[in-house]
Amino acid sequence: MASGVEKRIRVKHLRPCATCSGRGGTGETRCPQCQGRGQIRRVQQSFFGQFVNVGPCPQCGGEGHVFRETCRTCNGEGRTSETETIAVRVPRGVTTGNFIPLRGLGDIGRRGGPSGDLIVLIEEKPHPLFERDGNDLVLDVPTSFTTLALGGKIEVPTLDGAPAHVDVPVGTQTGRTIRLKGRGLPGLKGGTGDLRVRLMVWVPPRLGAAERKLLEELGKAESLKPPRPGRSLFERVKDAFAG
Ligand SMILES: [Zn+2]
Ligand SMILES: [Zn+2]
Image (cartoon, rainbow, N blue to C red):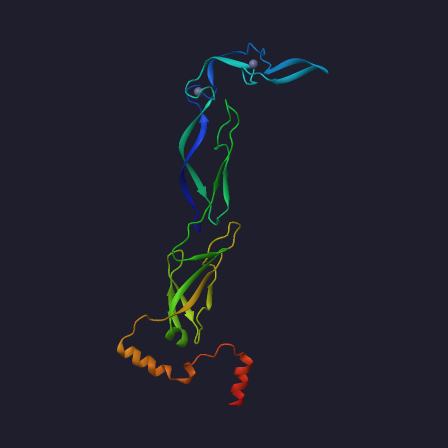
């Protein structure tokens, strides 16, 4: 979707019968029942008077001709089911729900009738790393508490494979998003989305004895205590002035 691709898809559709070249049979002659008109007029007498019914000829199906020999490959249909491999060019920037119409590659009509189209519907396969939001990509990056608190530089993967470097400002809260302009997906009508890097604090599931001791020591620091929930910024500012 980011770069465009040529896909080869297998399609089962009705194509002209190879045995009869799509005609339905050999030895075409004028239908004896309708004399080639394709219609049959039936006159009916009823209590109310005389009615004329016009309908398709039952012998030739309205076509006006019959075959001396009906094609046995297609039973006179003029078409057979074929499985073919078709190359489809998918342009860059497509998204789920876009479709590519391939003119004339659907089912062909009976006995050389016009062909329908083959509609290729685009469906996105989820990426294991990046989440899509329009043309933007969202990536959650586990980040250490120290990097968030002290600031620093982290390396993040991008869709094109070349890693990008992100500056983490001092005192960054978890969940903060840093936008990398133009590193998202291209739009079908031009323009490119951004890569939104969401920094998430990572908590180590296990600690060594030394790390535990250091963290316990840090935990006592007043400046490391988070604000109590439910208290507005205003109240905290008031507290600061009062105390
Ligand atoms: Zn007929
Ligand atoms: Zn045939």
